[in-house]
Image (spheres, rainbow over the protein chains, first blue to last red):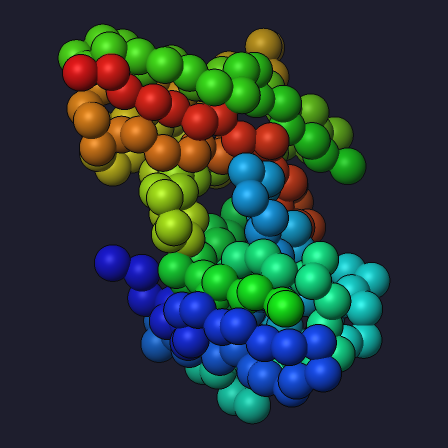
Amino acid sequence: DTEVTQTPKHLVMGMTNKKSLKCEQHMGHRAMYWYKQKAKKPPELMFVYSYEKLSINESVPSRFSPECPNSSLLNLHLHALQPEDSALYLCASSPGTGGRNTIYFGEGSWLTVV
Amino acid sequence: AQSVTQLGSHVSVSEGALVLLRCNYSSSVPPYLFWYVQYPNQGLQLLLKYTTGATLVKGINGFEAEFKKSETSFHLTKPSAHMSDAAEYFCAVSDGDDYKLSFGAGTTVTVRA
């Protein structure tokens, strides 16, 4: 069982809505990630938080806004999304951000933009 | 920069047969290598990883992989496929202090009864 918990599992939102995806881990990990995954494709990195500070933004549109309230929580705020943003959004965590650290993924949140 | 090539986007095997998924990587420094599995409508689960040490790595669910530096490969095997092995498999590489996992395109495994 994954120790990275994501809510909600499914979200349908209109293009003018504001919603949030939530992620929680209790493994004491210091790095947390958001990935986006389209069907039959590998995950694509969106954001990296290291020690609660945003360290990497992979040129993600501003309609996606990450937030890390504390070391265990990670949010992704969504506003004015487009239908092409429909995808599986995966939260992940790792002990650190060095290459040897294993990244552990949550079950994902399925987002549909209508 | 590192990259991963998974040979074969789809592999079909009979139940009880050998599963072999191929992964080749490129990296300018010694790599860290991972195999993840994704069951339908789920997130990614770590199968196994290579960081340093023994080149034959054993993972969960009877899978193992061998790191071959001379061939820049990290192929995944399982001696006897089970119906529950039907899933998408991703090979991934990272190196040094890099934060980023580079994923292969994935291989879909189907298991025939």
